[in-house]
Image (cartoon, rainbow, N blue to C red):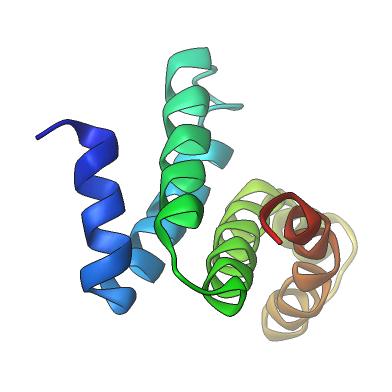
Length: 116
């Protein structure tokens, strides 16, 4: 069974596993930029997400997968903001983490039209 077929099977048979795989793909997509840029990892993460979304049977499932991918991508991709707000901005660590948690859903919604 190919990787794409396996991801499609996961999306249909186990929705929780599909959500977890979308989160892993989002983290891998963010990690593909820095500090170890890798176009191969980036394309694999996007292909995994595409297969998961196409294998889903409802638009709502695609919405949840897209939002999960986007949140995982932006929570890890813009995590450097916590360091800059805490260390250089003088903001307390809990407040900087809360700011990241409130900021990340905004850019992650830009992934939604791609999967809807």
